[in-house]
Image (cartoon, rainbow, N blue to C red; front, side, top):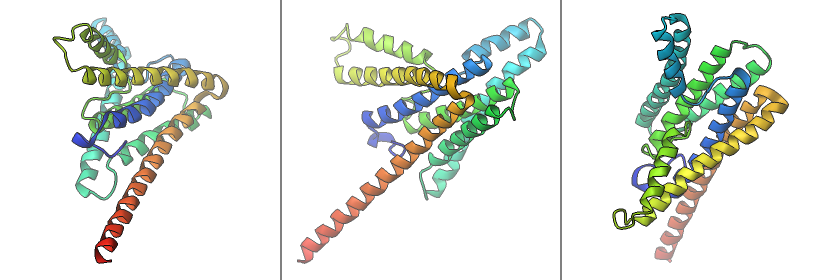
Length: 249
């Protein structure tokens, strides 16, 4: 899920990572909105507000939205930078550190905002947008830009296009590819929705503590992926030893 890239990556891998990351994004999105009335998984709306404030010469208000944009950008840059540095070492999964970074930010905000150590809505928004920038960057790199999990505008656009193509089988004969694309996009949208639904319910009970759940999901995904990889390696070694033993027998 976190390891396969390029030709070795399948639809199953993309759906797996898209499902649980979009679920996390749904939790973060609804938490940001319910707590500070800000969108904390994408910057489209913030960019519009930034332009509006600048046009009205309300520079100080516009600066806040500029910081939102910058936070998402810095998150994406940091994630990509870490991946590039770690990939040169080739010692461990290069996507592990960005995932742990995102988890750490969510834990930090969940604890500090929950205990009122952090009370600034703008700081909370910037931290969550940074975390989502990190996530959007590494999932884009993992899937070669096929999967995006923090905003739905492009997904609904692509889904609408793919559905329309089904009505023109002669022009678009690759039904299997269309079906896989539709399945992937519906998975992302569905899990984003379920993340928001469940996240909203849990937020009503424990507030910012719901971000700890989001962080736990990320860490659990890493642990599962690593264990599965170790099992696969062990099976390969065992199979190799059996073949050697059979040859020498």
